[in-house]
Length: 260
Image (tube, rainbow, N blue to C red; front, side):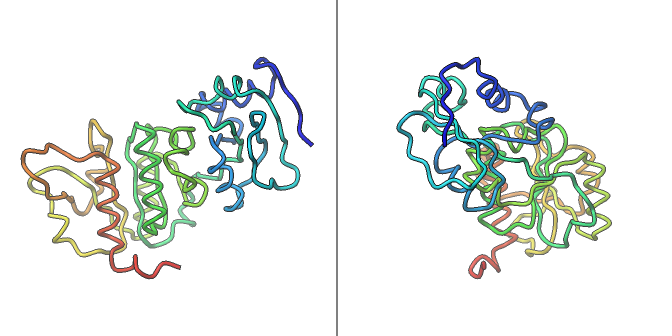
């Protein structure tokens, strides 16, 4: 049975709107918003804990799990709450997964570290690539954009629910990786860095730096090897998400034909 809400001032609508816009509020509530019916369907399929679905009149919904709060409203209210330019008329609130970095849960394998990534589109795209290429986790440093902001979740296309995501400070991340004996490799656009083509794929944590500043000094100091993607001299650099995807493919290339 659905509730019917006609005012943007309603407390449920205000709660969802604040989840869309306020990172601290998302953290305090332990929730995040998926925007669109496809993301709702992915959340259901992947077993996310869905709290609320708010939808415009006439919107087509998949079968919802029992206990999910259903709110019907106007398309005008959905448009006002959503941060997407062309909303699909459906928003769902999901429980945020546990992302604190417990070194005991950090398995030896292949990980991508997002070090100060600010753009939510890049954040979500990298998470999506990490999921597609079978990376064991995405590790996000303090100072990065929220991997569970609506724009990042939308760019991740469901992978934010599926992929293991950890968040912590750089020093904690470094100590955890060193305890697990996982070597750290950093992407760095400098002449002394090793050509990616000459680096053998291996279990490692690969650091991708911010779009403007690159890998932080603390992560550079902790890195065993610096990597660079060979590109034409006339091209200064690659977008962070593109660079991350190329490097992840390289490090997973011997296994990508046999994912389970």
